[in-house]
Length: 226
Image (cartoon, rainbow, N blue to C red):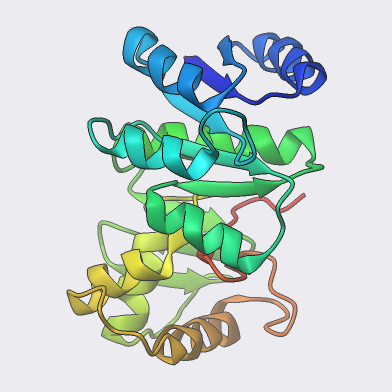
């Protein structure tokens, strides 16, 4: 799998090149935003790792430019930790966001999730986490062997998360998937349904391990938390 790393920090790029190559990735690098766009057009990477604060063109401009002609998954890797920066990047078309400094295991997990997503829905007919099994074919959920009753909307949310395990699912994506629109601004609906799902499926609903909120961005189903 070919990765384009766009970052103006040569030490970080060198470290990523070594680490990712050791895990089977073919890494190409761009030192600024303009070069990132040019290399994406020439090399057709499978995933783009993108810093926001780059010379010539910043990361947001790069995302917008890429989205004009490509649906390549974009993982933002940035030192900007503010919710507004994350929302701006996701709204521009990024698929996920990791803040610096990051753990290599987390970065690799995000890359695997994006690779699965690019390949379409998983072929597995069921997804398991903790003591929960989600049977996507039968549209059934069991916990510790016992059937769990979900409302139709709870099931739709869980199903969408389960079909993209490990990947960030934005609030806008869920609103569009469940209610058929991105224009619903009251995300209290989503918080309510996620709260109910955690009560039914998490060992400790107040400290969830699997159904996670990514502040300001959306939600993520983690099958095997670190």
